[in-house]
Amino acid sequence: MRSALFSVLGALLLAHDVTAQQSVVVPGFKNTKWVLKSEGGSNYACKCHPGDWCWPTSAQWQQLNASVGGNLHINIPPGAPCYNTFEGPLGTINTYDAAKCAEVTANWNSEQFQVELPTAGLWTYFTNDTCRPTTNPSDTCTLGYYPVMVIMAKTIDHIKAGVNFARTHNLRLIIRNTGHDFLGRSVGWGSLVINTHSFQNIKFHNKYTASCGYKGPAVTLGAGVQAFKVLEQAHALNPPKLMLTGECATVGVAGGLVQGGGHGPLTNFYGFLADTALEFKVITADGYLRTVNERAHPDLFWALRGGGPGAFAVIVEATFKLFDDKPSAGITLDINSAHTTNETLFWEAVRIFHSYSTHFVDNNIYVYYELGAGGLNLHVRPIVGIGKTLAELQAIVQPLFDDLNALGITYDTESHSFNTFYELYNNMFETEVAGNSALTGGWTLAREDVVANHTAVIEAFKKVVAAGSFMVGHMWSAGQNLPRSEWHKSAINPRFRHVVDKLITIVPIGGNAPLADKEEAQHRLTYVVDGALREASPNGCAYINEADPFQPNWQQAFWGTNYPRLQQIKKKYDPEGLFYTVSTPGTERWSQIETGTRLCYKL
Ligand SMILES: Cc1cc2nc3c(=O)[nH]c(=O)nc-3n(C[C@H](O)[C@H](O)[C@H](O)COP(=O)(O)OP(=O)(O)OC[C@H]3O[C@@H](n4cnc5c(N)ncnc54)[C@H](O)[C@@H]3O)c2cc1C
Ligand SMILES: *[C@@H]1O[C@H](CO)[C@@H](O)[C@H](O)[C@H]1NC(C)=O
Ligand SMILES: *[C@@H]1O[C@H](CO)[C@@H](O)[C@H](O)[C@H]1NC(C)=O
Ligand SMILES: *[C@@H]1O[C@H](CO)[C@@H](O)[C@H](O)[C@H]1NC(C)=O
Ligand SMILES: *[C@@H]1O[C@H](CO)[C@@H](O)[C@H](O)[C@H]1NC(C)=O
Image (cartoon, rainbow, N blue to C red; front, side):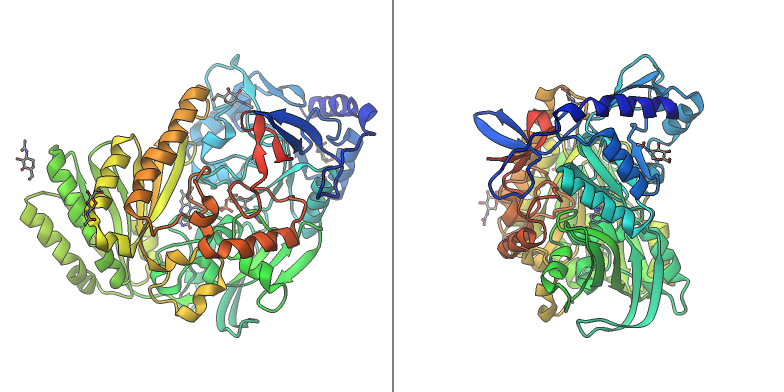
């Protein structure tokens, strides 16, 4: 198979050499490698994709391969071993391999399996759901929106080489770490990927002195380190330490999580992960390695803390504050069709549960819950008290149970206590699956709106579920205990300091569904589902990492008053738009035309 790959690459790429003399001047850009297109009455200058005159020659790819130590690969979708052939943009390749097909089929829904693949998107909608594992090898396997080429970077020089190559040839560049991105930012049609997952270094510091004045425990993480790894090692310290990560153990901490902000069970105490970041090492769009902190490139430091994933630079490593772990307790609550099939009663129970959101946040309690998955289903797992005994947590939660008892509804509940939050995290949070296809959106409820009209919030929840969506809720406030003087230090929307519930909405839809169905689902998500939540909480905001890619008024929704500064920083560090990710600062004139394929700049 390898030699077949090689000759295909050679033949197809050499074909472009003949026309490689052209150049196109686009006002505002130094680069002259563009392809001009028009669609819907607008003109566009597009990046270079396979088949274009400016797509690199085979000799140029081989040069790149040499400079990345042979770690450049033609990307083949993970399901390809189940098909006789893969029909890629670089030609047809024989791919059938029964053993590999069995492996990918068995592991399709395993997060870690997908994480370890060079380019897979865990949320398969954004791969166009192409080439899924099948039992029918004569079906067609195409690339869909999976990238074309991938560098499995092992060193800083490999990243630099990839950045310089993509900039020089005006390619669409994607930085990929674990593939968790809910908006498909770690895959992209016609692109070159730099995969940073092999940067797995972890270094603990007892007394770290940061440029911002912080002196205390910290940890430096390579870009590829996933939450479970650092949490496990921090727990083994004496005394055990914690860092702020998301509820999901497989997310990459120093990749997309910190750049989007990063909220989790510790958010009531310390804000976002971005608020705990002390320093970054990055490769900027000019190909240089830079140390970035409150003294060196303070503007970029601020932007990397919540200003948008994959939008400003490639992160090589990042340093974060560490905290003491504490005894913790957790309680669960389940109400579903086993308890009632009476919709009125069910929604009354939901109203009661949710009316405690301000009470929970006021008491520094974090709550993770799912609503509406498979019908009348409220799954609260867990309600978390960090630094609280079970008795203390029970005292806080008891009024909720008293109200549910008075309503006359039955439910299931469990209570557990642990010596550390780490143990609670491993025992009470559920593992998630990969390989599902859906559109996600979301909105965050402002405390003032929840207090002013809670009825409107519950009416909106009903509309969300009636529209075929379900929700994941996270009760916290990023301003609960973080001192006000720290709030401006990260780029997240200042509105997150005054919220009580961050919601993700999920509309299941196949990435290979007919285009009309996809459009309908997208419209429903944006305007019916999220529209209802926005209306119920006009003072709320949206979270760039768990959001609708077509969030209306996205600049304001994601960053609020911080947006203009982010836009300027983007212009300063990435003037040619090398780092494109959807709905991030400065991307106003960029879009994927021709049904979500070519990445183009509107002229
Ligand atoms: C099951 C699940 C649970 C989640 N739970 C939470 C949660 O509790 N809290 C929370 O805040 N978020 C949560 N998220 C969202 C999560 O924050 C984002 O998906 C995040 O962007 C993942 O980052 P990654 O690097 O692991 O993923 P990737 O998909 O690999 O990358 C995500 C984005 O970051 C960019 N990126 C990755 N690595 C680098 C790098 N080295 N340099 C520059 N850019 C890079 C990519 O280009 C892409 O735009 C969850 C997501 C999932 C799927
Ligand atoms: C890059 O080089 C390695 C090692 O020589 C080789 O295995 C691989 O196929 C090459 N990649 C491409 C795209 O040619
Ligand atoms: C993506 O899927 C749609 C159907 O949903 C199809 O019309 C389109 O051709 C596909 N595009 C690619 C690049 O695979
Ligand atoms: C459903 O629950 C509501 C609220 O408790 C109650 O008023 C109503 O009678 C119930 N309906 C049925 C059919 O039991
Ligand atoms: C609360 O919201 C509901 C539903 O949107 C609305 O009908 C009602 O008038 C609102 N009440 C107040 C006090 O604003």
